[in-house]
Image (cartoon, rainbow, N blue to C red; front, top):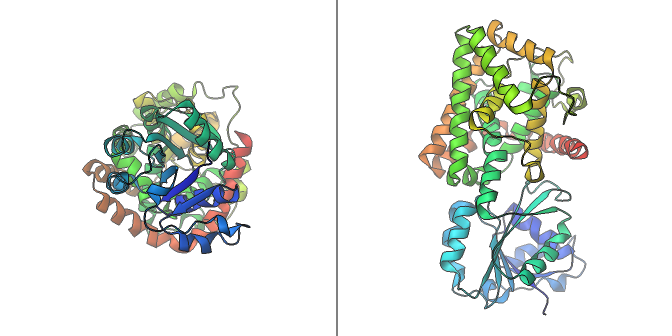
Length: 423
């Protein structure tokens, strides 16, 4: 059987990352932006003659085609290219929400075209080695599926076979609320005109995770998160519950209702993590992450209400989600977030301190108020289903933090390496 020639539609950050890896492994590919790509790949491709300059109709040329566009645009793009797709080709997308992608592929592609989709569960700036790579055999022979597995083996990723509905449920469980939490943090800190890593109140490993990952998310493009949040119905439900958990816990804190607050927090922690002090090994140690601070502030940690984390665990509890169920398909960001949540709830002294701080200490009350407003705002934005509104909210905060992105990416990569080495 002839070797695959890969067509790539959409040369954003993920499309470029795939092109680099595929080309470096010796596979032949074509792209609608091949002249741009030739320049991009020159430093890493020894045999540049393998870069076929075919600009007009790559869908008719490639025996395998990947569509690397945001989920909102997938239907329009597939409809445009479907009519000229090569007979017997294998086509798939790389969106974070598979329901609209599969619907578009099934609707517009000829019946003699096979469908195998994928999704790398990490950002374009993360080394794919060891990361989860979901493969979805929607309409294909076993032989074709094996060919795609072999093609993508050059990533060194951990390949996971799922159906499209399984993929969407797992990404909702592991990514939707995680993104919403960090987006809300950034919006709240911007509203308070704060760079938290420069303040003595945000010191310690847990705070380092919050600051670094918030910056890492805002350093990416808005559509990376919008498609998953808006087009995945299960994600919308979870983001809505997270905003509700934040609001209800904040009201209990602000009203000084310690008994109700403590009962709710401990009940959620028991449902998700079991008894505090459990013998199961922790994913992370707070002291391990102390080294990843962006600021130069005093090293003594300040007690924090940790509303962001308390609400996360409350949300998981209310929705009956076991965050450990999908570790094989979890993103580095989710593992970090789960790690610090677990650390808080399974350290009895730290949880006691957090509950006491949330009720008695008003130092973080204004921060928590802005965070509550931000969480509700992001939930409403997702419920409205407006991509333009999502983009405006995202880019407003992104502009505020932009000067610190280079440091955040560097430190974030180091943090991710730590979590990968431990999980």
